[in-house]
Length: 491
Image (cartoon, rainbow, N blue to C red; front, top):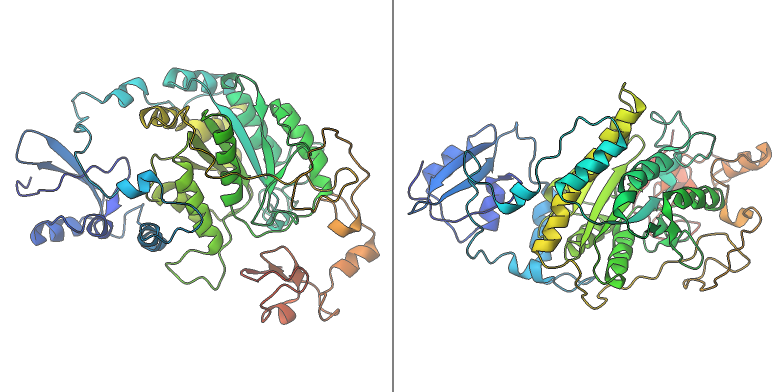
């Protein structure tokens, strides 16, 4: 216990390193001896501090090599730039501008034998021993969730073709067969769990990362932007769309998050849950220096921060083999948010357990949704539920690829109210996912388009491929002419 600690520090929920402390609170001083002793800690400790009165505050200090959560190297890069006026995609949020003003902190949090705050008393801990989705739904209702509207975003990047090597028997994660693929399973589980909280059961659904959207746009599951009626229609439209599109890239979650913000704004500020199902991390080029964010990473972080100004929770479900380290960093360490609005769940880890399927589904639903009640409560306390901000972000989705007679590659969506499925896709959009082509055609497609000799064994972020010899020095993709930021060697 040190009586000369002067700063009033309130850092909700997350432990942080002393280096982060020094950067966040440069004007507040601590005795060097105290800093030295705290820096030597190997685990997370709570230092109780008496502050010239009867109030007791908790400082959580994370230090040492055994710390499980460290401030990532890109944190300082993003945090310093995000408060220096360098945001060109969004105006500064009111929270981002005021978050550095540390006025009177919230009431002291002394939970050890003391009185818990209102939010802790109203939203009790959700247990984790359920064996059915119905039990999870009941638990969410008891925890305080009153109403929710679901938005679905599906990743259609090229990497889906090989990130199921271990977890999905070397098939594309979008493979359409008799059994549900991982995307269909995740949609079904979350849809069934949240359906009781959705009054109209209308679900906006979008795809991203295909050849029509890349990392810039999203497309609607319906050509007239009509929402799907329940998760059953989501699954039906998904199965109709998948064989008719072309997987591409690179991966960015910014467009789908901005689309969700647009929907929340258009609804008058109703609470929504954005479910993003993806097979991998946001694209990070090999040229991106350590401690820096790639363009896709930066835009994704900025979009998540911006989304915290709206009644919107974001759940990212990881399907396939991963890796997921950056997604966990997103979950733990994104700075300057009005509330903790992002949750990452590893679908593969949970569903590969050797337990009954119903128990696995319940565990997955709980892992994905257990923070929703507290996030819903946060939107109430921040007075952003039911508030309209005036369409700061207004995205318009593209139509679904390859339906109807119109040119679906246009930049503006069709407003037609008719829905007419067309014949199977033409070769202009490549091979349909989960289908086969004649052997001669497949053989030709596997030859490098530059040398016309070597097999394709290098993929770019845009989804196009060449051989390693031809592709290692390219600056622009020889097919779509987009800048090459990512190179992946194929085996």
